Amino acid sequence: MSEKNTAVETAPVEKVSVPPMGIRMIAREFIKDRLALFSLIVLVLLLLFAFVGTLFFDQSLVNTVNPIDRYLEPGSISMEGHKLLLGSDDGGRDVLGLLVIGARNSIFIGFAITIATSIIGVGIGIMSGYFGGIFDMIVMRIVDFVMILPIQLIIIVLVTIIPRYTALSLVIIMSVFYWTAKARLFRAKTLSEVRRDYVSASKTLGTSDFKIMFREIMPNLSSLIITNLTMNFAGNIGIETTLTFLGFGLPNETPSLGTLISFATDSDVLVNKQWVWVPASILILVLMLSINYVGQAFKRSADARQRLG
Image 1 (tube, rainbow, N blue to C red):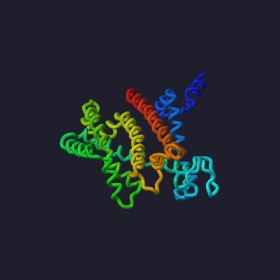
Image 2 (tube, rainbow, N blue to C red):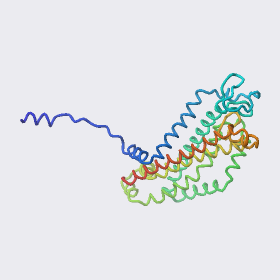
Image 3 (cartoon, one colour):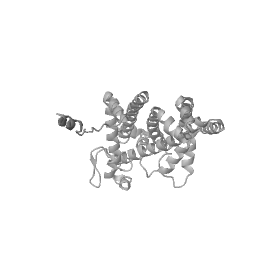
């Protein structure tokens, strides 16, 4: 009997892998909100369409102008024998190829600007709110000065005068100006966090300022960071598309969603050749809505994690 008990006691216990709490909360929020789950699926499909689809198109060939194929309707056959599923534009270029490459460029630029401005804005905002004093005053005066500038007008001027202007130039220019709102927002939230007991306890224990700011305060702002990242991602795509629509965004050799939408400025194209600009408009609308709903689900999961500590 004792041997059996010993065997039972010493029997190895199988370990069951449990996903981290954050992943479980995110999965629960998406399962609970079917609209957010559907938006996530749509967003993934759009990203695959934009980034995997570019493997089937050569940008140099897509940008090649062929006046003979000018404004062919969807389903027509080009002079080279290719079927144009979405027709062609005024230069005889394949609208589907422009849509895929343009979507990739717009999404990549919007994402790059969002990451750059978030790193600068969140970091400076947290440091300004944490240290306070003269440092906070200097930073806030710089933020105030930048925010009162006509930023879009300045971007248009810089785009016009910069030689060899590229997509990277647009990312850098926009990142220089669009971090200020984030800095002000996270500075205000940090001011309320530094008064809490856990910050005072960490300072008493001799924890370094860097660890307090970015390992204790910043995780408590995760809900706000996620929401801000999501909304700014969609907003930056919209800003890039708007600048390109006005003719001051990406260079002509770099397709964008704004490039296709800009064809709608022609009344004949607007009324009679909708296949040129309607797909890009629908893609932007669906992309913006999907990002918004996915961001809201991430925000709820971050809020739930903070409530549980």
